[in-house]
Length: 199
Image (cartoon, rainbow, N blue to C red; front, side, top):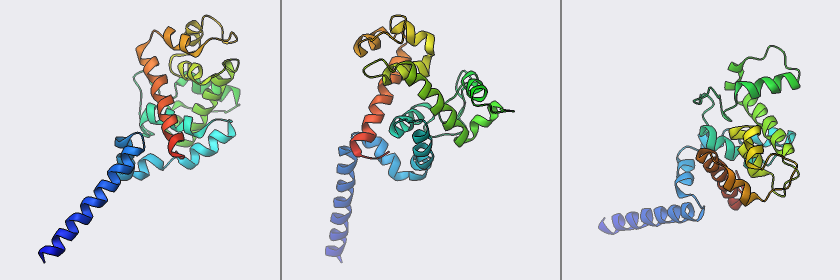
């Protein structure tokens, strides 16, 4: 009986060590453990993200990284300035989307619907990436615009989206610590997804 108990304890320790090693090798052990504990929360929007990202020619891992940063996958989240849903879309951005896409009767309450929210957020991100398409790496510029607005991003770039600006210079010019952290954390999260080969 004692031998069997020792064998069970050794097996459980080996399993725990194996899980710990896999989590540590993932690049973000805490995130990986949370994913194992609550896979529905972390993966429930993956199919939607892939579909909408493809429609807008976006990297789905970048879209998921934004959702992770903005709402931690909570479709009912409301931001401090009234941003809503998974991608924390502002009412102004949503109204621009509705006007450009001829969506009649749009209400900001619809931003709590994950499908609508990801559609609007992806549209806005795609538009931001287009603003910065002349940059060798438009992603940090577009993320700064997504977070702080086009006029601030242009100021940090030296006044124009069409002028090629070194990414390091641009990041150094971001004088909102929250936006600098935002850009860095999303790029880091996207790279985490890419390293492990899945969202």
